[in-house]
Amino acid sequence: MLYTDGLVERRGEVLERGMTRLRREAASWAGESVATLVEELLHGLGADADDIALLAVRVP
Image (cartoon, rainbow, N blue to C red; front, side, top):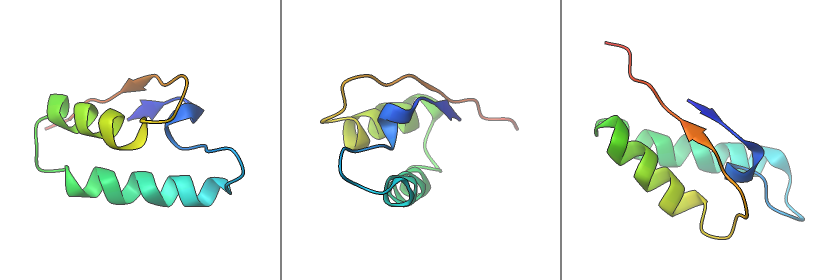
């Protein structure tokens, strides 16, 4: 996955907390299709973000 800082950064919060949130959320959707993973990450983590770009590829 490649993503911009808007996916993990929150104002007034340390970056490590956002990274941990991303790891947990991604792990919970890891068995799903890439499209579902991206959709759920954007929905779950991007609710209050102003700009996010996310690219995900699954390599067999």
